[in-house]
Length: 505
Image (cartoon, rainbow, N blue to C red; front, side, top):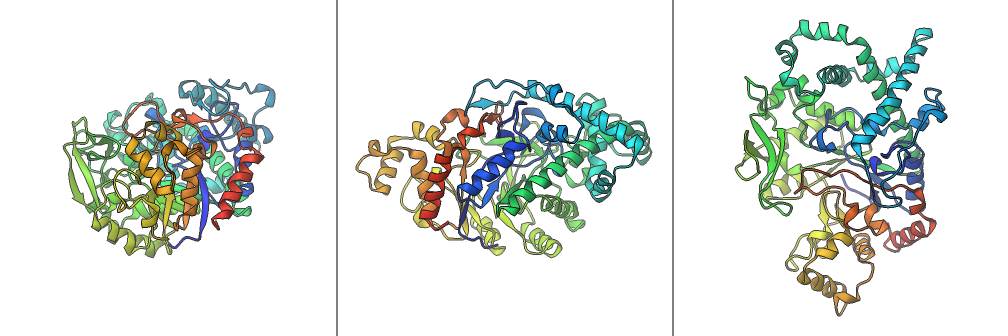
């Protein structure tokens, strides 16, 4: 895929303003699309949209690679449908007003699900009077992933969140009679989870349509791994490297020591049984891309290098140190994916330990790779992240969701890095540099990279408190949000539009 010379903004929907403690698909999302339009942007990049579990990571702790996160459902839109009443809704006060609020999941989850269950109860009453063809069509068209997901979530609920491999042996191993019995016993709970997915994707499709009509495309995200305690692993156990007795991961995913951690990263997800996936012509993976492309325009593949070779860590380890690289059939997979889906609108997250083989795989399919300005000033002029070393078919970011904000990074940068930046940009000393976030935004927009994506935190000029994720820390990530659309001011929009136009984006 070859990109045109455009730019966009990275912001997960949970970061949007909302009265209910977490961003959703309501009016603030539409306001953000309008801000993108007014600012001259063409892309909105989001993180994976799936329902999250422990610590709420959309990459490693997701209950499904296919489903949507019910916490993003707009309660106000349910009011407009008559499923809730405006006077019933009680807001959650922000811990801080303005740009530095954090999602308190312990408060948000019970608060929001109380309203979602109330809306479902009212929806269910309407089904007694008349059928709902939209729901029926959704369930029929999405049955290929939805049926397993809604049964899994229902079973997870009745088991109080206990991991599926500790359930009764017959249901854990998906014996047909046990599945049949549970579908019958949990019929109402299954309908509830169908309702949640129906409403999520109804709202998401409406938002995407609004964006597309205003010439804003959505960049989605496919995380390479899925959570062990997920519908994906439970329903497709043969696709993953599991211990045949305990059904726990036999090998865990992660990466060796890198920029983010001296001991590597242990994600804990099961790695894939690529031999079995090959025997199915990669059916599950092809379905996953097919599902994602129903709802986004371009797919960013997280940890792309894992399709060439992946870091496999033995079960029982507590760090990413004692792993080994295992080859993966990436070339064959992407050939099959292209034959199944046609032209692949894919971006490759080619960060970390990148070998010539990974670059060859990326370039074989003409996937744009990523360049991170924050990584550019640590050594010398040969650094591949420096703008003068870019090729056009790539995506440049000042920083991603895994990095600090530009201002947060600048506050901790070494004198060597600061002096290098000053020299690179023609300043006599780094103390002359003002508004470092806009300096980096200008570098990204001015570069030859066809696509520039800027985190909203950097557009807003926020410090370390607005960091979305720190990969070296397991707890407390994925929580940043801002509480007022007023921050997306006309002045800010005007400045971003003029800077974007200056560099012909």
